[in-house]
Length: 394
Image 1: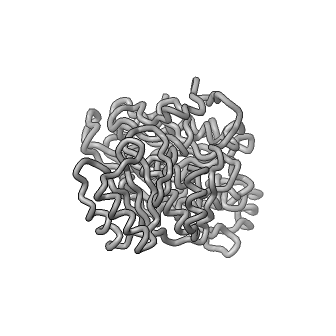
Image 2: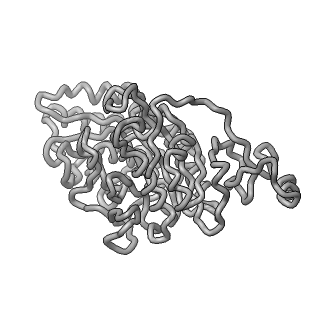
Image 3: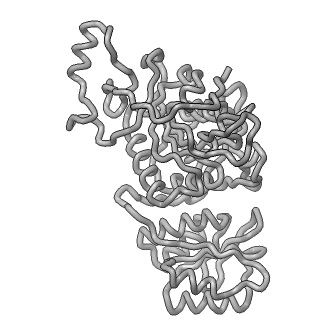
């Protein structure tokens, strides 16, 4: 069975020293008691501080009693924090806990079945609750994931993440990763210390999915509650339910039976999904979301632009409707400041068409439209390309 996590965990233990068996893949911990041949091989392998070793100083984890298995694929787990790494004062506490309290090595040790599926390596990118994810963290994550996927020895990647903004981060990677290999986001709705925590089985299913050759060519995916969904369209629909991630119109890609992924269709991607190269990007333009409602104060849009916003996303009423005074202010900002504005919607589903002075968000909800607009502005998209992007790709 999956190992429960203790309520009290000592954090901050020193990282284990690794030596590499293949470039950037230090799967096996070499220690005293090895044969002379193994010692000789160890002495010839690059150390992390050597010029020939990996350029990234990963926080790695491996188990001494789990040697490298050449018959299994290699999966890297990038950890960012969230409820899946959360810790509470008692086993029945499901609110008010500390998210991002446990490191990636603890998450891996809690699920020994991972080693029956793949050789795993843990990388701690951040350890925060997901509302604290910044553009800098996203860029670093995307860049390291891309480098890992470019490695011949990597079969796929898993990212542990808080569920509050998981749909935004997974969408970001879906637009910035170029690889046929699977990228799988996974989270939890209950902290790791809770009775019946969902994190361990979600993690095992995510790693199993990333290790499966049938997962290739499907873009970035999300795994929770035995379901597989596309990061492009999936959104969090319930603040508390375990079965919270849905793509109600587009549907799921598959599900799990006995931890094994079962897909409904052959590999495919959302129609016209764009790609943005961020490998050399260090920051992103500011884009703000304005929430539409009755008696909206139009000055909020001006305040956002005066505070540095280069683009705006309108979470409009119905199919993107905005108040008349608000529309006048938005049009003036577009014409006088050159602000890019995307119209999205408050309702959970639906399509938003373009208007005379705003781009239509299509099927994208406001938070995903914001991510796409940020990336497009960063890539230097101007009016014609922005209109094409949101008309045909969103």
